[in-house]
Length: 205
Image 1 (cartoon, rainbow, N blue to C red):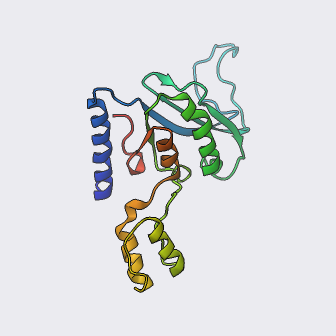
Image 2: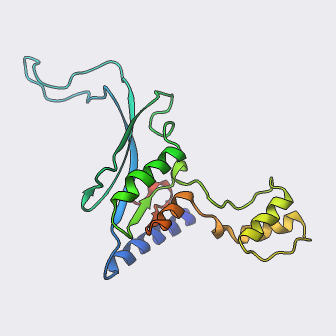
Image 3: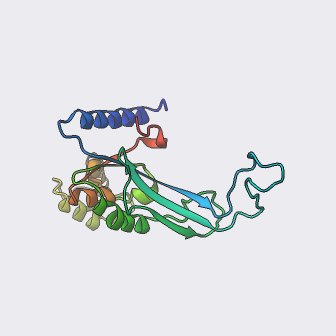
């Protein structure tokens, strides 16, 4: 939590939340997250009747795993926004192996956006399937012709006769040109995305 970039991201998040609250007409803030549950999950200990007629039914197998995605705000859960699907029981202990960008994108477009108020502020974390970059800054593995094309498509001034290394340095200065796919979809529908600081260090203040 003492890393400078984490501290800066936390301050930026809180500033955006406070600015929204201070508006004469604040945006509706929508939080979303994912979790999972096993079919036969149960508590290990609980109160029971002496004759054993009431209480948790302890099971030895986990059963099928289900991944869950939902969203809500101060008014409660968003109607029609629940996504729950059976996922494979892999070696991972949670839902990350079952969720991918395409599945999340379909849910975002078809179940979340149609059911929230216009101009909402959607709070996301930095899970990989939420963070696919729409316009990724080139790396050293890119060919020079593709590098020049990226610079031109982003209207960045450059000299085509310079070396590939010099062009890459120009790209690094324009890292802000990177945009997340989900963020762009939200903007096209009149909403705005606010991303939580790294490590989920701040939820709903």
